[in-house]
Image (cartoon, rainbow, N blue to C red; front, top):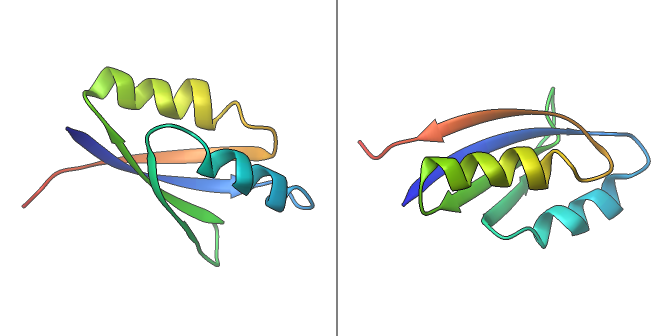
Length: 77
């Protein structure tokens, strides 16, 4: 299992629709709304790094209303 955090910046005025679509995305385990430079922090879970990358690039970044993302691969300490 590979996990990561994805920081997401949303387009103004489309937050509700974008958030609903992101929550339905397979691999998105948890969504947190935050204030500041980013609008959302997503907890992503996947079987391997390739699948994790596909969730981010093909699924999350393709959602209308997502302006930009930054991905952080996590590891247990």
